Length: 424
Ligand code: UDX
Image 1 (cartoon, rainbow, N blue to C red):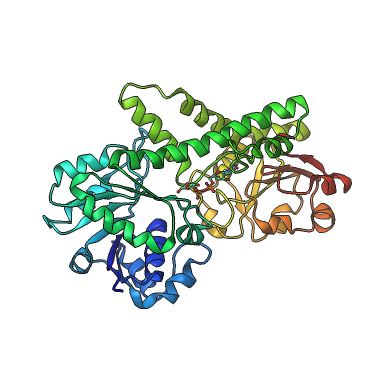
Image 2: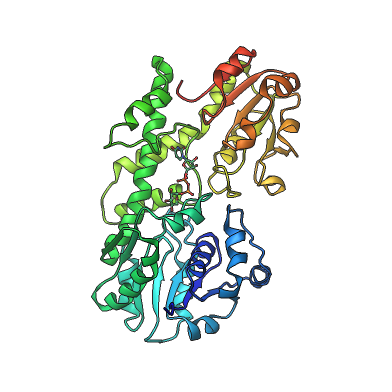
């Protein structure tokens, strides 16, 4: 069977995974990216982001993946155009749609193309575009990929959401057909509901995290262990075990931005979304709680050497957007501490992003002579360190704040460490 060629606009993280995923399913994929250097390196099979399995997938399907800077190249060959451009937050917290608008302005008045919106946009965007550009089809197809497991998520999604209003029903059928080989549950709905499913899903997951973080904070005071609490709660089918890991707060390119955007969107209609206001505030405070845990044992942090383990907002990604490490480095510098940070993948890029911190070449180098270690990102490498031997002998004070409850507390305590976890 001939597979429909598709277009992908924007070779960022979502665009590349989508393009490589559909190429793997047998489609010719035309990827339009405005940065010429990116197009050149992708043409050579070099993937500019850290995402497990993606470079292999891009190289394996190189024959079907075409990278270009020219919109015309893509419009000529593909009718379904997946929009995968950034919609970063503006200062006010609304989503910045200028890149989506730029795409629209380049489309001309084609009446045989459809935009398939993967970029996260405010509810109402699709209808507004469809009103302004009646000749172009419009399908909302929000993205639920997780960084670090995006390739697997593409192959076996929990669900695929396809939102279209009447005029674009045929295009939506074609989008549905693209996903048929994945054998996933398809949620066919209207555009506004599809847009809301994306924002509401992220807001709900973020709420789950802030909830368990608050349970953790109270558990610390009352003598319960949040990991036990989460285990007991998660076995209830209605609650589920996922996203109940207490820690130093959520970061990344989606949760902080989308929760803020939904709150703002509600506000624009005159509705005060109280719950989300609290979710955001809890997360901001959670990112800072580590400071008082350090002070509890070290007193003033002025002149203290602190090893920050992990810069990325979570493991298996080089993404530092809204990462807790950034907030912590700033607060620690403010308290006068000397911060030495290490991340296995972010590496030298962290320089300049972490206020006043030194970037170490290895975890051991960061820990050398440290008064405290703060584990911010649960990279596997940090679990494999020889904590009770090499690490212990290198640190000046054997104090660990385990911001992800990732290390073996019993082992560390037995070896003479002072251990502070989250909620236990
Ligand atoms: C998220 C959504 O999961 C995904 O569906 C959407 O498409 C994009 O946003 P991502 O940002 O890649 O994906 O990361 P995710 O794994 O969801 O983690 C987000 C943040 O929450 C991380 O900082 C992580 O450390 C934190 N987190 C997650 C917790 O603190 N506790 C948990 O139990 C789960």
